[in-house]
Amino acid sequence: MQGLNPDYTLILLDGEPMVGRTAGVLDLNRITVGNIKQIEIVKGPSSSLYGSEALAGVINIITDKPKTSSLNASARYGSFNTGDFNLSGSIRKNKFAYQGFGNIYRTDGFSIRPNSVERAIAPIKRYTMQHNLSWYFNEKTNLSLNLRWNDEQIKNIISVTNNGNVTTSEGAENNKDLNATLQLAHRINSRLKNTSRLYGTRYESLQELATTNGSPYTDYFKQQFGRIENQTDFVINDQFELNAGVGYTIETANSTRYDNSTNTKTNQIGFAFVQSEWKPFSKLTIIGGARYDNNELYAAAFSPKLALQYKVSDQFSLKASIGRGFKAPDFRQLYLNFTNAAAGGYSVLGTVEAQKIIGELERIGQIASLENDFYRLGELKPEFSTGLNIGGNYIFSKKISFSFNAFRNNIENLIDSRLVAYRLGGAQIFSYLNVKNAFTQGVEADFKYALSNTFSLTGGYQILITGDKDEINRINDGKVFTRDANGFSRLMQRSEYVGLPNRSKHMGNLRIQYENKTNFFANLRFNYRSKWAVTDIDGNGLFNTNDEFAKGFVQVNTALGKTFHNSLRLQLGCDNLFDYSDINNLPNFPGRRFYTSIAYNFLHKKIK
Image 1 (cartoon, rainbow, N blue to C red):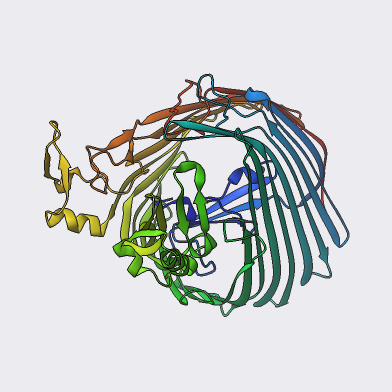
Image 2: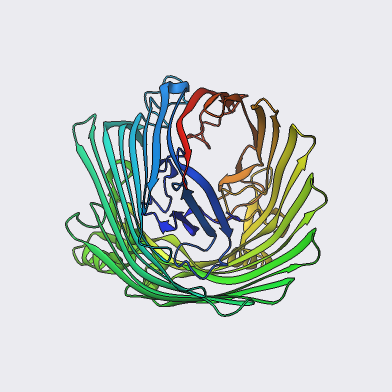
């Protein structure tokens, strides 16, 4: 989001954070789409209500809540023997409301490498259940309980090549996910409301593999997160509202990669936030706030925010926001103790234990040399970002609307992995440091155009520029070299610098939609991504026009279907219509996929 990595985006499910990231990335496949009502996106660090991991923004996935008595079932089947089956129902009687949802998903996986037994997406079976219960004591007070359970079973075939030798491992992986939220909301009067929340989540992953040489491998990870929070909302007058809250979280992790799985790592955080909304006059809205997080493992963080919106006319409005957010060092960066014997024996150590472990290895004569970055090891600081967004919305007519946003994010204390030592024999040891000061900036634009009562167009475009300030200074000072067409060394020019890797300068999307009065619909969707840097070919430690790039591409998806009597819905579709693939740079990107789905609403009764 806005050029920042996935681990800088906070993922919420019904307003509560999800845990269980791998290398900072959360597998969104754990969230089934069958009961998603809407997705809210806040770009940049512009909200005071959220803390760590929200540098790039917040994505809140909101599931459907019972407003009608209903019973629905749906099934989808497609390429790679992929099946997706849903059953949901809801009921409300007097003061009680309930909604239940169940999903079963399975796939044989796929491989885009010819004659390979290894799957880019492994065979998966996934089971999900969600239950939401609400009790309305009266018009002012209600109690709700939300429970979600997810169980994922994966068959693994993994191949690792080291010095020409291929080691193949086969086994299974089991991931379990449990979330529970208890909320009590009470409206004291027309201007004052109080909400208390208790949230807990547990993610557990176990991978067991047997290699071709008989050596077993076990990877275990468990993360638990608990939070208690109280939020009070005040309506001071017609122009001013205030939200304030305090809370406490505790987070624990156990992993075979954190020295041993029985040693529990713990972090505790106390936090407080305040946010106000002021309308000095009808056309202007100002939102300001701040959040304070006091952590036991690293320095405390203060995050102020300010946003405003000015309605120039009924058709045109302007908005701007500036905020400072932070991302806390994760357990991996603090406690990791991992050695990959299959790939040369390199080690990655979290900063809490790195100096101690390397010092002990040096004492027994196992360290060949220490790098300069070893002497910089110390307490990690949170990564901070200052984000600025300026944009607007213009409604040309009932048929045409347009929005734009220009953004700039300055990231300080960016955490990066660095080589800190060599073992005897040449094996490398890495750890983590606050080393980089990066930036991302660009412009986003979206439009909607209703061509007629049946045809519509929607689309969007983003141009993105990124960079590391220290790298740019080195280029400007004449300290960075590259190679010419003949392989000779020469000074690198500023114009050759392309910024941070794995980011496309241009991205766009276009959707053509048709829907008539008989409830028949069809759509065609285009997603474009320009080339992006992947490998530092000339070895100068940064990315420039002489390095290796992944090719840009356009993915085309299409679907058509019809709804009968507001109860039965049939759909056919094809994703990646022109079968685009990139084995080296997009190994998880499948080829052409066909699917068909059917959904039926057995009961649809409006709740009084």
